[in-house]
Image 1: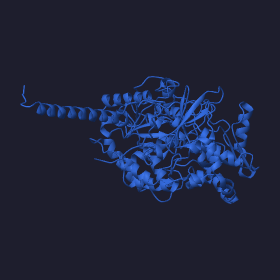
Image 2: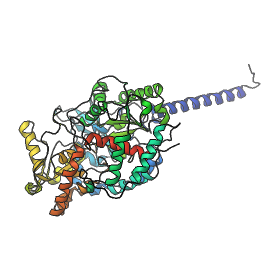
Image 3: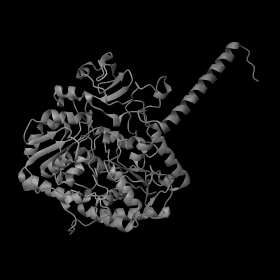
Image 4: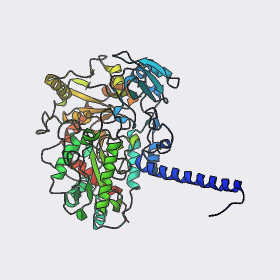
Length: 566
Protein backbone atom coordinates (compact mmCIF):
# COMPACT_ATOMS: atom_id res chain seq x y z
CA UNK A 1 0.00 0.00 0.00
CA UNK A 2 1.34 3.38 -1.01
CA UNK A 3 2.23 5.65 1.88
CA UNK A 4 2.01 9.42 1.79
CA UNK A 5 4.48 11.67 3.53
CA UNK A 6 1.96 14.39 4.19
CA UNK A 7 -1.71 14.13 5.26
CA UNK A 8 -2.63 16.92 2.82
CA UNK A 9 -1.30 14.90 -0.11
CA UNK A 10 -3.36 11.90 1.03
CA UNK A 11 -6.50 14.07 1.26
CA UNK A 12 -6.02 15.57 -2.24
CA UNK A 13 -5.54 12.16 -3.87
CA UNK A 14 -8.66 10.73 -2.25
CA UNK A 15 -10.70 13.80 -3.18
CA UNK A 16 -9.68 13.33 -6.81
CA UNK A 17 -10.66 9.66 -6.68
CA UNK A 18 -14.01 10.57 -5.16
CA UNK A 19 -14.70 13.17 -7.87
CA UNK A 20 -13.75 10.67 -10.61
CA UNK A 21 -16.00 8.03 -9.07
CA UNK A 22 -18.98 10.41 -8.86
CA UNK A 23 -18.40 11.53 -12.45
CA UNK A 24 -18.24 7.94 -13.65
CA UNK A 25 -21.47 6.99 -11.87
CA UNK A 26 -23.25 10.07 -13.23
CA UNK A 27 -22.08 9.30 -16.78
CA UNK A 28 -23.29 5.71 -16.59
CA UNK A 29 -26.61 6.86 -15.14
CA UNK A 30 -27.17 9.39 -17.92
CA UNK A 31 -26.30 6.83 -20.60
CA UNK A 32 -28.77 4.32 -19.19
CA UNK A 33 -31.48 6.95 -18.86
CA UNK A 34 -31.15 8.02 -22.47
CA UNK A 35 -32.01 4.45 -23.44
CA UNK A 36 -35.09 4.39 -21.25
CA UNK A 37 -36.45 7.92 -20.85
CA UNK A 38 -37.81 10.49 -23.31
CA UNK A 39 -35.21 12.91 -24.60
CA UNK A 40 -34.54 15.72 -22.19
CA UNK A 41 -35.46 13.93 -18.97
CA UNK A 42 -32.20 12.13 -18.27
CA UNK A 43 -30.59 15.11 -16.53
CA UNK A 44 -33.77 15.86 -14.59
CA UNK A 45 -33.79 12.30 -13.28
CA UNK A 46 -30.63 13.11 -11.34
CA UNK A 47 -32.38 15.80 -9.37
CA UNK A 48 -34.25 15.13 -6.14
CA UNK A 49 -38.01 15.13 -6.51
CA UNK A 50 -37.94 14.38 -10.24
CA UNK A 51 -40.83 11.96 -9.75
CA UNK A 52 -43.03 14.73 -8.37
CA UNK A 53 -45.98 15.43 -10.69
CA UNK A 54 -45.25 19.13 -10.61
CA UNK A 55 -42.18 18.49 -12.74
CA UNK A 56 -43.17 18.80 -16.36
CA UNK A 57 -40.83 18.59 -19.29
CA UNK A 58 -41.94 18.88 -22.87
CA UNK A 59 -40.41 15.93 -24.68
CA UNK A 60 -38.47 16.72 -27.83
CA UNK A 61 -38.90 14.26 -30.62
CA UNK A 62 -35.40 13.53 -31.80
CA UNK A 63 -31.99 15.13 -32.19
CA UNK A 64 -31.58 14.08 -35.81
CA UNK A 65 -30.99 16.64 -38.51
CA UNK A 66 -34.31 15.60 -40.06
CA UNK A 67 -36.12 16.85 -36.98
CA UNK A 68 -34.07 20.02 -37.06
CA UNK A 69 -35.24 20.58 -40.62
CA UNK A 70 -38.83 20.04 -39.54
CA UNK A 71 -38.40 22.54 -36.70
CA UNK A 72 -36.97 25.07 -39.15
CA UNK A 73 -40.14 24.67 -41.20
CA UNK A 74 -42.46 25.49 -38.32
CA UNK A 75 -44.16 28.85 -38.21
CA UNK A 76 -45.00 30.70 -35.03
CA UNK A 77 -48.72 31.09 -34.36
CA UNK A 78 -49.38 34.18 -32.28
CA UNK A 79 -52.10 34.07 -29.68
CA UNK A 80 -53.56 37.26 -31.16
CA UNK A 81 -54.83 35.19 -34.09
CA UNK A 82 -57.80 34.41 -31.81
CA UNK A 83 -60.04 36.79 -30.00
CA UNK A 84 -59.09 37.09 -26.34
CA UNK A 85 -62.51 35.99 -25.17
CA UNK A 86 -62.16 32.64 -26.91
CA UNK A 87 -58.68 32.02 -25.55
CA UNK A 88 -60.15 32.45 -22.08
CA UNK A 89 -62.66 29.72 -22.85
CA UNK A 90 -59.89 27.29 -23.80
CA UNK A 91 -58.89 26.73 -20.22
CA UNK A 92 -61.20 23.79 -19.61
CA UNK A 93 -59.34 21.79 -22.26
CA UNK A 94 -58.30 18.24 -21.39
CA UNK A 95 -55.09 17.00 -23.00
CA UNK A 96 -55.15 13.67 -21.19
CA UNK A 97 -53.82 11.88 -24.24
CA UNK A 98 -50.76 14.09 -24.60
CA UNK A 99 -49.27 14.30 -21.11
CA UNK A 100 -45.91 13.38 -19.73
CA UNK A 101 -45.46 10.63 -17.19
CA UNK A 102 -46.39 11.42 -13.62
CA UNK A 103 -49.03 14.00 -14.54
CA UNK A 104 -52.41 13.14 -13.15
CA UNK A 105 -55.70 13.49 -14.95
CA UNK A 106 -59.20 14.07 -13.68
CA UNK A 107 -62.16 15.04 -15.82
CA UNK A 108 -64.13 16.64 -12.98
CA UNK A 109 -62.11 19.80 -12.45
CA UNK A 110 -63.50 23.11 -13.64
CA UNK A 111 -61.02 25.99 -13.77
CA UNK A 112 -61.87 29.66 -13.61
CA UNK A 113 -61.01 31.29 -16.98
CA UNK A 114 -59.29 34.12 -15.09
CA UNK A 115 -56.33 31.82 -14.61
CA UNK A 116 -55.19 32.82 -18.09
CA UNK A 117 -54.39 36.21 -16.69
CA UNK A 118 -52.15 34.90 -13.92
CA UNK A 119 -49.80 32.60 -15.82
CA UNK A 120 -46.33 33.33 -14.54
CA UNK A 121 -47.61 34.64 -11.22
CA UNK A 122 -47.74 32.83 -7.85
CA UNK A 123 -50.19 29.93 -7.40
CA UNK A 124 -53.87 30.87 -7.35
CA UNK A 125 -56.42 29.09 -5.20
CA UNK A 126 -59.57 27.99 -7.04
CA UNK A 127 -62.64 26.02 -6.12
CA UNK A 128 -63.21 22.53 -7.45
CA UNK A 129 -66.70 22.23 -8.82
CA UNK A 130 -69.04 19.73 -7.27
CA UNK A 131 -67.78 19.24 -3.74
CA UNK A 132 -66.44 22.66 -2.86
CA UNK A 133 -62.88 21.47 -2.24
CA UNK A 134 -60.04 23.77 -3.19
CA UNK A 135 -57.02 23.46 -5.41
CA UNK A 136 -54.09 25.46 -6.73
CA UNK A 137 -53.16 26.63 -10.20
CA UNK A 138 -49.40 26.31 -10.61
CA UNK A 139 -48.29 28.08 -13.82
CA UNK A 140 -45.30 26.46 -15.50
CA UNK A 141 -44.85 28.58 -18.62
CA UNK A 142 -46.94 30.56 -21.08
CA UNK A 143 -48.47 27.34 -22.42
CA UNK A 144 -48.87 24.95 -19.52
CA UNK A 145 -50.16 25.07 -15.98
CA UNK A 146 -50.51 22.38 -13.35
CA UNK A 147 -53.86 22.18 -11.58
CA UNK A 148 -53.38 20.70 -8.13
CA UNK A 149 -56.34 19.97 -5.87
CA UNK A 150 -56.69 18.16 -2.58
CA UNK A 151 -56.78 14.74 -4.24
CA UNK A 152 -55.76 15.10 -7.88
CA UNK A 153 -53.25 16.84 -10.10
CA UNK A 154 -53.89 17.68 -13.70
CA UNK A 155 -52.19 19.20 -16.73
CA UNK A 156 -54.16 21.14 -19.31
CA UNK A 157 -53.11 22.94 -22.44
CA UNK A 158 -54.02 26.62 -22.27
CA UNK A 159 -53.05 27.67 -25.77
CA UNK A 160 -52.96 26.36 -29.34
CA UNK A 161 -49.58 25.01 -30.50
CA UNK A 162 -47.08 27.81 -31.00
CA UNK A 163 -45.48 26.18 -34.04
CA UNK A 164 -47.26 25.13 -37.21
CA UNK A 165 -46.08 23.27 -40.29
CA UNK A 166 -48.37 24.07 -43.18
CA UNK A 167 -49.17 21.73 -46.05
CA UNK A 168 -46.77 23.41 -48.49
CA UNK A 169 -43.94 22.97 -45.98
CA UNK A 170 -44.87 19.30 -45.59
CA UNK A 171 -44.65 19.01 -49.38
CA UNK A 172 -41.12 20.40 -49.39
CA UNK A 173 -40.06 18.13 -46.55
CA UNK A 174 -41.45 15.09 -48.35
CA UNK A 175 -39.51 16.03 -51.50
CA UNK A 176 -36.35 16.55 -49.49
CA UNK A 177 -36.64 13.18 -47.77
CA UNK A 178 -37.22 11.51 -51.13
CA UNK A 179 -33.99 13.01 -52.45
CA UNK A 180 -31.85 12.20 -49.41
CA UNK A 181 -32.91 9.34 -47.18
CA UNK A 182 -31.59 9.21 -43.61
CA UNK A 183 -32.34 5.54 -43.08
CA UNK A 184 -29.64 3.25 -41.76
CA UNK A 185 -27.68 1.21 -44.30
CA UNK A 186 -27.98 -2.58 -43.84
CA UNK A 187 -25.10 -4.11 -41.89
CA UNK A 188 -24.87 -6.89 -44.47
CA UNK A 189 -26.40 -7.47 -47.88
CA UNK A 190 -29.48 -9.51 -48.73
CA UNK A 191 -31.00 -10.61 -52.06
CA UNK A 192 -34.10 -8.64 -51.02
CA UNK A 193 -32.07 -5.42 -51.21
CA UNK A 194 -31.53 -5.83 -54.94
CA UNK A 195 -35.23 -6.46 -55.47
CA UNK A 196 -36.07 -3.21 -53.68
CA UNK A 197 -33.53 -1.26 -55.74
CA UNK A 198 -34.91 -2.76 -58.96
CA UNK A 199 -38.45 -1.79 -57.92
CA UNK A 200 -37.36 1.78 -57.21
CA UNK A 201 -35.79 2.10 -60.64
CA UNK A 202 -38.96 0.85 -62.34
CA UNK A 203 -41.17 3.21 -60.32
CA UNK A 204 -39.08 6.30 -61.09
CA UNK A 205 -39.11 5.39 -64.79
CA UNK A 206 -42.86 4.86 -64.97
CA UNK A 207 -44.48 6.21 -68.17
CA UNK A 208 -45.87 9.71 -68.00
CA UNK A 209 -49.34 8.62 -69.10
CA UNK A 210 -51.45 5.55 -68.51
CA UNK A 211 -54.95 4.40 -69.32
CA UNK A 212 -56.60 2.98 -66.24
CA UNK A 213 -60.34 2.97 -65.69
CA UNK A 214 -59.92 1.97 -62.04
CA UNK A 215 -57.85 4.96 -60.92
CA UNK A 216 -58.88 8.62 -60.96
CA UNK A 217 -55.69 10.52 -61.74
CA UNK A 218 -56.51 13.92 -60.11
CA UNK A 219 -56.62 12.43 -56.59
CA UNK A 220 -53.03 11.16 -56.90
CA UNK A 221 -49.76 13.05 -56.81
CA UNK A 222 -48.47 10.92 -59.68
CA UNK A 223 -50.90 8.24 -60.79
CA UNK A 224 -48.37 6.51 -63.07
CA UNK A 225 -45.84 6.07 -60.27
CA UNK A 226 -48.58 4.86 -57.94
CA UNK A 227 -49.86 2.29 -60.43
CA UNK A 228 -46.37 0.98 -61.21
CA UNK A 229 -45.51 0.79 -57.51
CA UNK A 230 -48.79 -0.98 -56.71
CA UNK A 231 -48.24 -3.53 -59.48
CA UNK A 232 -44.70 -4.20 -58.24
CA UNK A 233 -46.03 -4.60 -54.70
CA UNK A 234 -48.48 -7.25 -55.90
CA UNK A 235 -45.74 -9.12 -57.77
CA UNK A 236 -42.79 -8.66 -55.46
CA UNK A 237 -43.57 -7.78 -51.86
CA UNK A 238 -43.25 -10.43 -49.16
CA UNK A 239 -43.99 -9.79 -45.50
CA UNK A 240 -43.04 -11.84 -42.48
CA UNK A 241 -45.45 -11.61 -39.55
CA UNK A 242 -43.80 -12.28 -36.19
CA UNK A 243 -45.47 -15.07 -34.23
CA UNK A 244 -44.12 -13.85 -30.90
CA UNK A 245 -46.50 -12.23 -28.45
CA UNK A 246 -49.56 -13.47 -26.62
CA UNK A 247 -53.19 -12.48 -26.90
CA UNK A 248 -54.91 -10.13 -26.38
CA UNK A 249 -52.17 -7.54 -27.00
CA UNK A 250 -50.87 -9.49 -29.99
CA UNK A 251 -52.77 -11.30 -32.74
CA UNK A 252 -56.22 -10.24 -31.51
CA UNK A 253 -57.70 -7.54 -33.76
CA UNK A 254 -60.38 -5.07 -32.70
CA UNK A 255 -62.79 -4.71 -35.62
CA UNK A 256 -65.28 -2.19 -34.28
CA UNK A 257 -65.10 1.30 -32.86
CA UNK A 258 -62.61 4.13 -32.98
CA UNK A 259 -59.42 2.02 -33.16
CA UNK A 260 -60.68 -0.40 -35.80
CA UNK A 261 -58.02 0.54 -38.37
CA UNK A 262 -55.22 -1.24 -36.51
CA UNK A 263 -57.49 -4.25 -35.98
CA UNK A 264 -58.68 -4.63 -39.55
CA UNK A 265 -55.14 -4.34 -40.87
CA UNK A 266 -53.96 -6.99 -38.39
CA UNK A 267 -56.78 -9.36 -39.37
CA UNK A 268 -56.25 -9.00 -43.12
CA UNK A 269 -52.45 -9.04 -42.91
CA UNK A 270 -52.19 -12.17 -40.77
CA UNK A 271 -54.72 -13.98 -42.96
CA UNK A 272 -53.17 -12.92 -46.25
CA UNK A 273 -51.65 -15.64 -48.46
CA UNK A 274 -50.38 -13.40 -51.24
CA UNK A 275 -47.92 -11.29 -49.28
CA UNK A 276 -47.17 -13.27 -46.10
CA UNK A 277 -44.29 -15.75 -46.11
CA UNK A 278 -43.33 -18.33 -43.50
CA UNK A 279 -39.59 -18.00 -44.18
CA UNK A 280 -38.38 -14.61 -42.88
CA UNK A 281 -35.34 -14.79 -45.17
CA UNK A 282 -37.68 -14.19 -48.11
CA UNK A 283 -39.30 -11.10 -46.58
CA UNK A 284 -38.80 -7.47 -47.61
CA UNK A 285 -40.77 -6.21 -44.60
CA UNK A 286 -41.46 -7.44 -41.07
CA UNK A 287 -44.77 -6.79 -39.30
CA UNK A 288 -45.10 -6.52 -35.52
CA UNK A 289 -48.78 -7.42 -34.92
CA UNK A 290 -49.69 -5.71 -31.66
CA UNK A 291 -52.69 -3.57 -30.79
CA UNK A 292 -51.90 -0.24 -29.15
CA UNK A 293 -55.48 -0.12 -27.91
CA UNK A 294 -55.24 -3.53 -26.22
CA UNK A 295 -51.85 -2.59 -24.80
CA UNK A 296 -53.49 0.36 -23.04
CA UNK A 297 -56.52 -1.73 -22.03
CA UNK A 298 -54.53 -4.56 -20.44
CA UNK A 299 -51.47 -2.84 -18.97
CA UNK A 300 -52.38 0.72 -18.14
CA UNK A 301 -53.14 1.13 -14.43
CA UNK A 302 -56.19 3.33 -14.16
CA UNK A 303 -55.58 6.63 -12.39
CA UNK A 304 -51.84 5.93 -12.25
CA UNK A 305 -51.21 8.50 -15.01
CA UNK A 306 -48.02 6.66 -15.87
CA UNK A 307 -47.46 4.94 -19.21
CA UNK A 308 -43.87 3.87 -18.66
CA UNK A 309 -44.83 0.22 -18.26
CA UNK A 310 -46.52 0.24 -21.68
CA UNK A 311 -43.39 1.55 -23.34
CA UNK A 312 -41.22 -0.88 -21.38
CA UNK A 313 -43.41 -3.78 -22.51
CA UNK A 314 -42.78 -2.92 -26.18
CA UNK A 315 -39.09 -2.38 -25.49
CA UNK A 316 -38.79 -5.91 -24.11
CA UNK A 317 -40.71 -7.21 -27.14
CA UNK A 318 -38.34 -5.46 -29.57
CA UNK A 319 -35.32 -6.74 -27.69
CA UNK A 320 -36.72 -10.27 -27.90
CA UNK A 321 -37.04 -9.99 -31.68
CA UNK A 322 -33.54 -8.59 -31.97
CA UNK A 323 -32.06 -11.43 -29.89
CA UNK A 324 -33.98 -14.24 -31.60
CA UNK A 325 -33.72 -13.12 -35.23
CA UNK A 326 -30.92 -11.43 -37.20
CA UNK A 327 -33.24 -9.27 -39.30
CA UNK A 328 -33.78 -6.44 -36.82
CA UNK A 329 -30.06 -6.01 -36.26
CA UNK A 330 -29.34 -6.03 -40.00
CA UNK A 331 -31.25 -2.80 -40.57
CA UNK A 332 -31.73 -1.43 -37.07
CA UNK A 333 -35.45 -2.11 -37.52
CA UNK A 334 -35.76 0.06 -40.64
CA UNK A 335 -37.55 -2.73 -42.56
CA UNK A 336 -39.94 -3.42 -39.65
CA UNK A 337 -43.32 -1.76 -39.33
CA UNK A 338 -46.20 -1.34 -36.94
CA UNK A 339 -49.80 -0.18 -37.36
CA UNK A 340 -51.28 1.66 -34.36
CA UNK A 341 -54.27 3.97 -33.99
CA UNK A 342 -54.21 4.76 -30.27
CA UNK A 343 -53.16 8.30 -29.36
CA UNK A 344 -50.39 7.01 -27.12
CA UNK A 345 -48.63 4.98 -29.84
CA UNK A 346 -46.03 7.66 -30.71
CA UNK A 347 -44.92 7.74 -27.05
CA UNK A 348 -45.00 3.97 -26.55
CA UNK A 349 -42.79 3.29 -29.59
CA UNK A 350 -40.14 5.95 -29.05
CA UNK A 351 -36.44 5.07 -28.94
CA UNK A 352 -36.65 1.27 -29.08
CA UNK A 353 -38.75 1.37 -32.28
CA UNK A 354 -37.51 4.74 -33.47
CA UNK A 355 -36.15 3.51 -36.82
CA UNK A 356 -39.19 1.41 -37.69
CA UNK A 357 -41.85 2.54 -40.12
CA UNK A 358 -44.91 3.55 -38.14
CA UNK A 359 -48.43 3.72 -39.52
CA UNK A 360 -50.02 6.08 -36.99
CA UNK A 361 -53.41 7.75 -36.70
CA UNK A 362 -51.78 10.42 -34.52
CA UNK A 363 -49.73 11.82 -37.42
CA UNK A 364 -48.43 15.00 -35.80
CA UNK A 365 -45.20 16.46 -37.19
CA UNK A 366 -44.47 18.14 -33.85
CA UNK A 367 -44.48 14.87 -31.90
CA UNK A 368 -42.04 12.81 -33.93
CA UNK A 369 -43.95 11.78 -37.07
CA UNK A 370 -41.40 11.45 -39.88
CA UNK A 371 -42.78 12.54 -43.25
CA UNK A 372 -41.58 10.19 -45.98
CA UNK A 373 -40.93 7.31 -43.60
CA UNK A 374 -44.00 7.05 -41.38
CA UNK A 375 -47.50 6.58 -42.73
CA UNK A 376 -50.54 8.61 -41.71
CA UNK A 377 -53.08 5.91 -40.87
CA UNK A 378 -56.75 6.79 -41.55
CA UNK A 379 -58.75 6.75 -38.34
CA UNK A 380 -62.00 4.92 -39.07
CA UNK A 381 -64.99 4.59 -36.78
CA UNK A 382 -66.40 1.19 -37.79
CA UNK A 383 -69.96 0.72 -36.58
CA UNK A 384 -70.43 -2.89 -37.71
CA UNK A 385 -67.67 -5.52 -37.71
CA UNK A 386 -69.80 -7.83 -39.84
CA UNK A 387 -70.54 -5.15 -42.40
CA UNK A 388 -68.03 -2.27 -42.27
CA UNK A 389 -69.64 -0.76 -45.39
CA UNK A 390 -73.06 -0.27 -43.81
CA UNK A 391 -74.73 3.06 -44.70
CA UNK A 392 -72.07 3.82 -47.32
CA UNK A 393 -72.72 6.76 -49.64
CA UNK A 394 -74.74 9.95 -49.57
CA UNK A 395 -76.92 12.31 -51.57
CA UNK A 396 -75.76 13.68 -54.93
CA UNK A 397 -74.25 17.16 -55.01
CA UNK A 398 -77.45 18.75 -56.28
CA UNK A 399 -79.44 17.52 -53.25
CA UNK A 400 -77.03 18.61 -50.53
CA UNK A 401 -78.75 21.66 -49.04
CA UNK A 402 -76.61 22.15 -45.90
CA UNK A 403 -73.47 24.23 -46.41
CA UNK A 404 -71.44 22.87 -43.47
CA UNK A 405 -72.03 20.43 -40.64
CA UNK A 406 -70.28 19.43 -37.42
CA UNK A 407 -71.48 17.73 -34.25
CA UNK A 408 -69.33 16.17 -31.54
CA UNK A 409 -67.77 16.29 -28.11
CA UNK A 410 -65.79 19.36 -27.09
CA UNK A 411 -62.39 17.65 -26.94
CA UNK A 412 -59.41 19.98 -26.97
CA UNK A 413 -59.17 23.74 -27.34
CA UNK A 414 -60.08 23.99 -31.04
CA UNK A 415 -63.64 22.71 -30.91
CA UNK A 416 -64.47 25.30 -28.27
CA UNK A 417 -63.31 28.01 -30.64
CA UNK A 418 -65.32 26.48 -33.48
CA UNK A 419 -68.52 26.46 -31.42
CA UNK A 420 -67.94 29.93 -29.99
CA UNK A 421 -67.88 31.35 -33.51
CA UNK A 422 -70.44 29.22 -35.29
CA UNK A 423 -72.80 27.39 -32.89
CA UNK A 424 -76.29 28.81 -33.51
CA UNK A 425 -74.75 31.82 -35.24
CA UNK A 426 -75.66 31.17 -38.89
CA UNK A 427 -78.44 29.03 -40.42
CA UNK A 428 -76.09 27.80 -43.16
CA UNK A 429 -73.54 26.56 -40.61
CA UNK A 430 -74.94 23.55 -38.74
CA UNK A 431 -72.30 23.50 -36.00
CA UNK A 432 -73.33 21.66 -32.82
CA UNK A 433 -71.86 20.21 -29.67
CA UNK A 434 -72.48 16.62 -28.53
CA UNK A 435 -75.60 15.02 -29.92
CA UNK A 436 -77.81 13.16 -27.42
CA UNK A 437 -77.27 9.41 -27.11
CA UNK A 438 -79.48 6.92 -28.87
CA UNK A 439 -80.02 5.28 -32.25
CA UNK A 440 -82.22 8.10 -33.53
CA UNK A 441 -79.50 10.62 -32.76
CA UNK A 442 -76.88 8.53 -34.60
CA UNK A 443 -79.10 8.27 -37.65
CA UNK A 444 -79.69 12.03 -37.53
CA UNK A 445 -75.90 12.55 -37.43
CA UNK A 446 -75.42 10.28 -40.44
CA UNK A 447 -78.26 11.96 -42.33
CA UNK A 448 -76.66 15.37 -41.75
CA UNK A 449 -73.36 14.14 -43.20
CA UNK A 450 -75.13 12.62 -46.19
CA UNK A 451 -76.96 15.93 -46.80
CA UNK A 452 -74.11 18.44 -46.29
CA UNK A 453 -71.77 19.90 -48.87
CA UNK A 454 -68.88 20.28 -46.43
CA UNK A 455 -68.24 18.27 -43.27
CA UNK A 456 -66.09 20.07 -40.71
CA UNK A 457 -63.28 17.89 -39.29
CA UNK A 458 -61.62 19.74 -36.38
CA UNK A 459 -58.90 18.16 -34.27
CA UNK A 460 -59.73 16.89 -30.80
CA UNK A 461 -57.15 16.12 -28.14
CA UNK A 462 -54.77 15.09 -30.91
CA UNK A 463 -54.41 16.15 -34.54
CA UNK A 464 -56.31 13.20 -36.00
CA UNK A 465 -60.07 12.80 -36.25
CA UNK A 466 -62.31 9.97 -37.53
CA UNK A 467 -64.50 12.59 -39.22
CA UNK A 468 -62.10 12.85 -42.14
CA UNK A 469 -62.84 9.26 -43.19
CA UNK A 470 -66.49 9.60 -42.13
CA UNK A 471 -66.91 12.52 -44.50
CA UNK A 472 -65.43 10.52 -47.38
CA UNK A 473 -67.58 7.52 -46.40
CA UNK A 474 -70.75 9.65 -46.73
CA UNK A 475 -69.44 11.50 -49.84
CA UNK A 476 -69.18 14.85 -48.07
CA UNK A 477 -66.19 17.10 -48.79
CA UNK A 478 -63.99 17.05 -45.65
CA UNK A 479 -62.84 20.39 -44.25
CA UNK A 480 -59.73 19.62 -42.20
CA UNK A 481 -58.96 22.06 -39.39
CA UNK A 482 -55.89 20.68 -37.63
CA UNK A 483 -52.53 22.38 -37.77
CA UNK A 484 -49.53 20.01 -38.00
CA UNK A 485 -51.70 17.08 -39.14
CA UNK A 486 -50.28 14.99 -41.98
CA UNK A 487 -53.27 13.75 -44.02
CA UNK A 488 -53.54 9.98 -44.65
CA UNK A 489 -51.45 8.57 -47.53
CA UNK A 490 -49.79 11.95 -47.89
CA UNK A 491 -47.00 10.37 -49.96
CA UNK A 492 -49.34 9.32 -52.81
CA UNK A 493 -52.63 11.27 -52.58
CA UNK A 494 -53.36 14.83 -53.73
CA UNK A 495 -55.67 16.11 -51.00
CA UNK A 496 -56.36 19.36 -52.86
CA UNK A 497 -58.51 17.34 -55.27
CA UNK A 498 -61.07 16.18 -52.72
CA UNK A 499 -60.77 18.22 -49.50
CA UNK A 500 -60.39 21.69 -48.05
CA UNK A 501 -57.67 22.43 -45.50
CA UNK A 502 -58.28 25.44 -43.23
CA UNK A 503 -55.72 26.82 -40.80
CA UNK A 504 -56.90 26.95 -37.20
CA UNK A 505 -56.42 30.71 -37.10
CA UNK A 506 -58.92 31.09 -39.97
CA UNK A 507 -61.93 29.64 -38.11
CA UNK A 508 -63.56 33.12 -37.93
CA UNK A 509 -63.49 33.19 -41.75
CA UNK A 510 -64.78 29.64 -42.18
CA UNK A 511 -68.04 30.52 -43.91
CA UNK A 512 -66.35 33.03 -46.21
CA UNK A 513 -63.83 30.37 -47.21
CA UNK A 514 -66.54 27.82 -47.99
CA UNK A 515 -68.89 30.20 -49.81
CA UNK A 516 -65.88 31.42 -51.81
CA UNK A 517 -65.67 27.99 -53.43
CA UNK A 518 -67.61 28.13 -56.69
CA UNK A 519 -70.32 25.60 -57.46
CA UNK A 520 -68.25 24.06 -60.25
CA UNK A 521 -65.22 23.75 -57.94
CA UNK A 522 -67.39 22.16 -55.25
CA UNK A 523 -68.69 19.60 -57.74
CA UNK A 524 -65.10 18.76 -58.69
CA UNK A 525 -64.22 18.26 -55.03
CA UNK A 526 -67.28 16.12 -54.37
CA UNK A 527 -66.55 14.04 -57.47
CA UNK A 528 -63.01 13.58 -56.16
CA UNK A 529 -64.44 12.38 -52.83
CA UNK A 530 -66.55 9.76 -54.60
CA UNK A 531 -63.55 8.59 -56.63
CA UNK A 532 -61.13 8.43 -53.69
CA UNK A 533 -63.70 6.73 -51.44
CA UNK A 534 -62.71 3.20 -52.48
CA UNK A 535 -59.23 3.79 -51.04
CA UNK A 536 -60.71 4.43 -47.56
CA UNK A 537 -62.98 1.39 -47.24
CA UNK A 538 -62.50 -1.75 -45.17
CA UNK A 539 -63.73 -4.94 -46.83
CA UNK A 540 -64.30 -8.23 -45.03
CA UNK A 541 -62.00 -9.73 -47.66
CA UNK A 542 -59.35 -7.47 -49.10
CA UNK A 543 -60.19 -5.81 -52.43
CA UNK A 544 -57.70 -4.24 -54.84
CA UNK A 545 -56.96 -0.60 -54.01
CA UNK A 546 -58.97 -0.73 -50.76
CA UNK A 547 -57.82 0.59 -47.40
CA UNK A 548 -55.84 -2.51 -46.45
CA UNK A 549 -53.90 -2.47 -49.69
CA UNK A 550 -53.40 1.31 -49.53
CA UNK A 551 -51.82 1.05 -46.07
CA UNK A 552 -49.59 -1.81 -47.15
CA UNK A 553 -48.66 0.03 -50.34
CA UNK A 554 -47.64 3.20 -48.49
CA UNK A 555 -45.41 1.13 -46.19
CA UNK A 556 -43.86 -0.58 -49.23
CA UNK A 557 -43.57 2.73 -51.12
CA UNK A 558 -41.89 4.58 -48.26
CA UNK A 559 -39.49 1.70 -47.66
CA UNK A 560 -38.43 1.77 -51.31
CA UNK A 561 -37.63 5.46 -51.24
CA UNK A 562 -36.02 5.35 -47.79
CA UNK A 563 -33.82 2.35 -48.54
CA UNK A 564 -30.05 2.96 -48.70
CA UNK A 565 -27.92 0.12 -50.13
CA UNK A 566 -24.59 -0.89 -48.71
